[in-house]
Length: 160
Image (cartoon, rainbow, N blue to C red):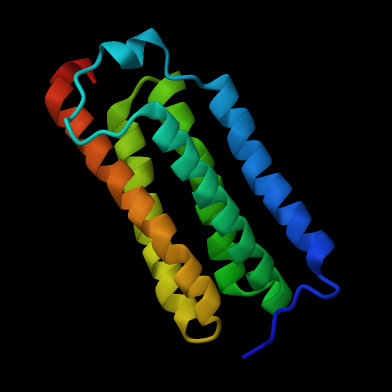
């Protein structure tokens, strides 16, 4: 197991956090919910928009930390490439839902995201348990997003 420390690697951590969360925030800014989304029927268990924004911000920060750790352990490893795939896929959820106005596509994106995060958590458990544990709140947030998005698809039928 490789030790990952902040002592001389903190600038790279700052870069990872700024890049992952920064791109996520820009995407959120260019793809607002809008009137179309407000008009859709939503499940009772759906949290307010401020909660979703905060949850995704936390997910992006945690994903950035995981990416930083994996990069330091082995930047060319399959786990690092899987992490990059997860981050890119996470950036597609908001445009699929709010720009494309397609809850079914957004559901496919977020369900795939959940499965890939689970796979990465299992993979990293063998060599970096901290990364694996950091993924657990991300998986929980994504599973909640799967439930909300699936309910929106079911409640709105062909309109979704």
